[in-house]
View (tube, rainbow, N blue to C red):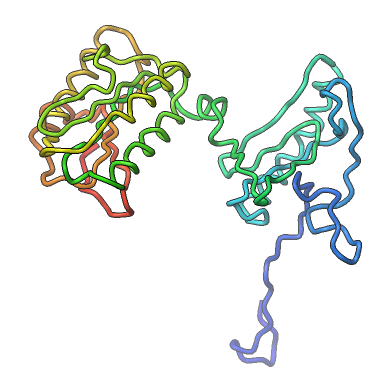
Length: 299
């Protein structure tokens, strides 16, 4: 809106500010040096409750946890917290109908976590709360479809030192995203193929906790040498996924190849044309190592 009598550049303007406040689980009941409640803190009544392991809780309200690396007044988060406030009544009604219920919660793709009953969250000694609902098994399983994944790890000579360390950590992080409905295998490659678990040559295994931990232990045995022959690894991965799918085992849903490397010297169009075109049933993803972009692959 413009005001009559003023040039456009002199017009007053309206700035949209976030005025909605919610109960932030970290800030509730916290005060500043003058004794005033912190913003997003406010008074939040907490009473020890035997049903919740004698923790101080509020059975009338939920509150919201936001990961430390997220801005708790980001408009996207505030907007989501606002519309999810209606869950308070749902949580309370559920508990009234079934007092045996314990914790109820909602996890958002934006990162905020609404929990009932409301409880105060305490950061660690570094002032950090590492919890992010999007990394939890229940969230990942609900947000993603079952999938078969082959992880290819470059262990050629160029991966020596820090790059191989980063590669191993990247693989471990990928395993964290897999759940019981997923199937996977890990193949290291240079001029030859090296199954991380030789007993599972040519097949995929369920991504349950025991199997993932078993593979993590074997990652420490990888070392870098030789020349990276990605074409051999891609052929093996595509063949494995194709044969596994035809057995009727696995997720019977999405399939993917995760490529962990510091670079590739070709686009391997011939391999993709043979196995993945035109339907492109298998997604091929290549995370970054050392922040350097890698060759792009058709998916």
